[in-house]
Image 1 (cartoon, rainbow, N blue to C red):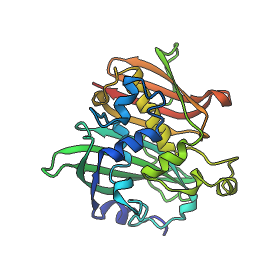
Image 2: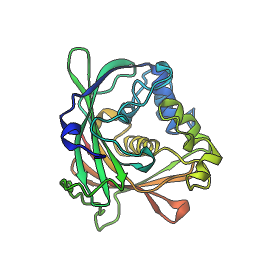
Image 3: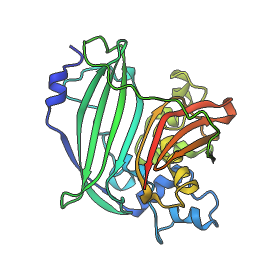
Length: 289
């Protein structure tokens, strides 16, 4: 059986030690397009070690960057789940930040399958990771939703329904983020070396005109845009950030993020204006301090 829910949900968590430096953080920020105007003090705060800030979505790559050397991606060898990796898609991502992420540091990261949902024609595997400092204090918790085509129909729960509709009023703010033609080449140095983001021939075999930007790069770009444009440049104000990946983006295209605010909850919708507003990130919410 491709999915053994009991084995998947009762397996012991996989644990690894992660370490990162200021160089890892700065390279990650460059992969999000930070520092495009190197004379802008706000941009310099993301790419210069003096008073270096950390975009919370750095948690997605912590311990996997240039300081780590060659790292095998964590979480793809899942107990109780024997599926064709060519059938999986990164469907959604959430992050809860328990404490400010330091510009250099270490953490113990545990990974486990938290849930498996039956969507009929597909299964959704929820891979949860939690990071703690050496004294056991929580740093962050993340959950990746892995969409496995053709693996549904095993009689499991369908999972929660999440509303994806934006408020029926004009956005309170619209943020514009320009990506560069080499942005995927820079971002991949922080973690995901998949040739889909670098090799034109490989991208064509996968059905794309050219290499695409990583979904997690778009996730980080939008988070940074909200911090800069709504949260006064203070990344420690982000409590949580949850999205679904709705469409690909080519390096050099623009991400336009509409923001609706309701108290401490932001509803977001990220689209690509060069392609008639095609969605990039949907079902997106951010809790802020």
